[in-house]
Image (cartoon, rainbow, N blue to C red; front, side):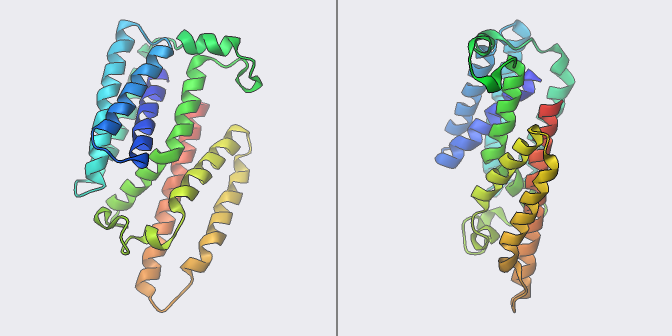
Length: 244
C-alpha cells in the first residue's frame, strides 16, 4: 500500500497548493516533488520503487493538469479517469512494492509520541494520505462529480449562478465533516458519524425550504444531496483504505 499512499499524498499536496494559490503546472510539480521526497524518506529506494516513484510523479502532474481542465471547459470525467486508473494500477502492482522504512521508520522507532507507538512507516504513510485527501482533494472530487452529473456547470464556479455561492460554507464544512467521519471510523465509532450527517441536514434545512422559486430550490437540493453523498463516500473510501 506504500505506493498508493505516496500517490495520494502527491495528489493531495498538489490540490492543497492549488487551493492556496492557483498556478498552473507549478502546483502539480510541487505535489510530484513531495510524493517522490516522501517515498525516498520512507525507504522506497530499490530500482523498482524508484521507477514507481517516477511514474507516480507523472501521474500527479497528469492529475493536476486534468483537474485544471476538468474544472474549466475541459471534460470533467478525465481527472476522475486518471484517479481511478491510477488507484486500480496501484492496487494491482502493490505486491511488488518495497517495504517502507527508511528515515521515517527510524523516526517512528525513536519517537516518544504515544499515538505513534508501534506504528510502522507504511501505516503512517497510509494514515497521512487518508487525512490529506480529506482536505482539498475531497472538494475537487465532489466538484468533478457534480460537473459530470450536470448538477453544476464548472464555468459558473464562483459566480452568482453557482449553487455553492448560495449554500455558503461548503468548502470548509466538507473537509471538516470528512476528517470527523474518518476520525470516528478510526476510533471504532463509525455509527456516531450519523450525527454529522444529521447535523449537516439540519444546518442546511432553512436554506432548502420551499420558496416561490422552485427551480432554484430543486437545483440547490440536488447540489446538496449529490455533493454530500460524494463527500461522505470520499471519507468512507479513505477509511476502507486505512483499514485494509
